[in-house]
Image (tube, rainbow, N blue to C red; front, side):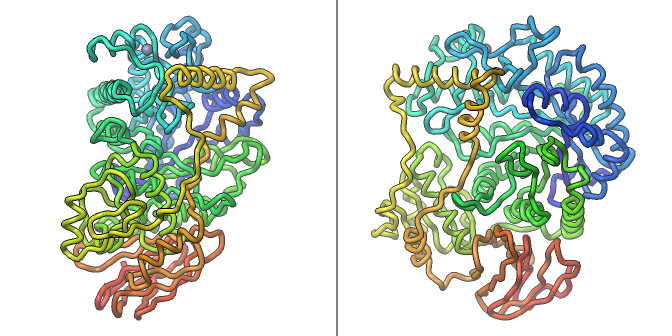
Length: 636
Ligand SMILES: [Zn+2]
């Protein structure tokens, strides 16, 4: 078998998650009792026919779920099927990463009597989903149970282990300011926290402005990272070259909560690769939806750790058939590649004929073919796709603790959204590399003023938003009021506690079968929708005209466009263009001087030579121009 996939580089690591077979059917039935299941396709994932369809898509890693958290007597039969599937994939040259649920379990059969559930401050077990409970990570019996499953995965012959949704004990519901709110209050956790923190109690509400809360969040993050490390070490003891993967939550990317490291960075430290779960970009009436800003921030915060953008279909309505066009798949993979993140696909969560199914369903044949072409293209062009550093002359400054200041965080996202809507290059910097930056956009709040002053003194241009800065005395966006989110008075402990209690009760009811469930599900679902912040048109224009038309290279398109600029070691540049519209977009690239080079795209068979001071291209989904003075001599 080829070891190519052990190289965590674009084009070498081509991963697909595929939750199928009996265990998945059981879990779907439990979570969504009224949803129809396409058993035929869910089972196909573990057969030769399924392997053949994965091969068509050009993946060399497939993620199969080993354990969803059912008691051992229920899972025994699934493990037999799992082992067979592992050998089918491996015989076809595809490596298998086995998934294990580390956060929750199903309290039935021999698990009904277990006492490892996480408890809220009112002593109630915390549901993860209908029929599941969150587990307390301080419980040694739970730790051992996860370890037992890791052993089963490795005995099953996997090359990788995947920790599903660890999210640092994160939650389903969130408090004000997006800080995770579900956290175990059991006696064990209280005692462990008190021992490590001068006999303090776990705070009953999570107000991040409170220093004790921050101490608690830091402690919890450390505990979770340590536990994941112990499980990873166990896997590596059994199989030294095992690939460890974990799922990170994209919304964690920008939080520092406790200082220098974001939870994502901490989470990633013990893994070989972190999967960032998201949905495909799409134009939307409430504003363009995409993952570019999250991916750019995540990439910035974890520069040394491979990240994969694990995109799946939109799930607005579980009963509506998935209608993502083949172009959206290419756009989603291109979006990752344009930000130097590994493209990966979530092959689950699809709906066809109103039934839950997989990407393997007959209805998605064209999409599979498009993914196959894109993976082949990524593999073919991997040598240069992986050799580049950010070279945009325009950058948005996002200090490391940006998400501790909600206003600054929203301004950064609104500025990035403005750049994308106007085809201006997207690059986010923190206090690290500013190589090649000529203009920097600065949000309000705490920044490194010394660095800005140095930058301005050496002819750098500063565009300050909302607050005057060295090099920019008249800031923009001073009248731009961000959309008011309902702010809870969490500083009043009693009110905060009451609100928390109501939220916890709502969350519990939403995951208890009954009359209220459908209604509460809908309310809860709204917390999950992420829309990028689109500022009013006049506000966008203010920023765009301050940036000016002189910026080069500049892409002039017809709508939302992700444009990133990179430099190769030989001096040539790569201009990555991702079209977020649902129809092809004509784009004119205004170059710094006469430029020539080649255009590459997963949707075109051949590379095309281009030259000029204004280069015109039509972008269906994803295109890359490799240009330079004189340009590369030959494509490839
Ligand atoms: Zn606990």
